Length: 475
Image (cartoon, rainbow, N blue to C red; front, side, top):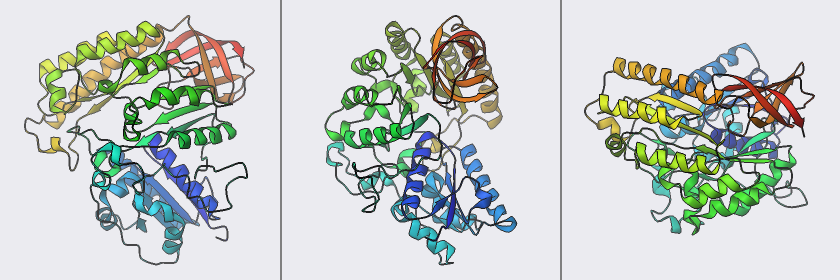
């Protein structure tokens, strides 16, 4: 490709990070030059997020910032990909002429040709969005082998001759050289939560084959990765479309046994699908950290039914009790939605009571907003925007206090910290109960550590969800 340079800007969740690295792998295999600084690239690819209103705004801002570089430097084209591009397609292209192309998931396998066409000035017709759930059979057991473009699932179609002699590698190039990396288990979702649009543009649930996940884990280990962060829209459903709904219990020990991998972390767990066997594996398997990213969303039974979800505050507390009986130091985090249509004062009180009793390590608090194409967008009994903001502030203040108390409870404990940065003898990283980016960090002072080391450290203090520690040992 004559060294044509591309910068990939990623917004949103860890799943998008995997998708960006697939795009990078494809472009690298086709001879493009990947650069870190968008200002030095001929093409800027913005991998957008389309989850909630703020994420959409952030994605639009990133596209506009990239477009500004076109008049100030080397940039010749700006291309939108990712969830926002898939969700809105031609509509986004019409409303955002600053982007030279808006490409959907089906364009990923031919991303190099698409970018060349944009640079050549050939018009790219943006897709008309469709419900991607309809691309796979309704019955999970019938989905295996159906040819559908699913970002982050690439593997066998790497151009011939580009894989190492020892065997196939994933279509992926790391964009972040840190010691932890996301690894995609599955894509899509079969749940029908009334507030969520993700299944419409991400599609029905589709598991990756265990052999593909393991091959990619080994490849990541060869890249210096020590912690695998397993991601999907719903990790508890892994394997159901492959004929084994308990396949995750089998896969986790195999991933933990990969040479070079010290920690395996699972994210995006549905409380209603948690089973005793999975809790047992996640709390007893060496190398699998007892970390539970549980999507509670609320604690009022009636409101959860209106959200088209299962469970209640009582059942969630039972699950938390079971986890902590098996692993008292387990990390448990969640997200909640405040101000959902029809939320009463009693519903809000039930949520606050649950949070006080659950004592979670981290809680993300989101205010409800209508999302295009969702059932809840047509609900009655919607709360005024200022009331939603007030409730969010109220719950967020409570969460800040509770999270700080939970962190204080860890003072005196010894934790294993995966070092992610070192400066002037101060190492910063994450303990086993802290997931990447969103769960706080642990700072260890006076330690002769390097990035990628695991440091056993004694917790001496805390600030919010962050821990302060001193070293006990380094390995």
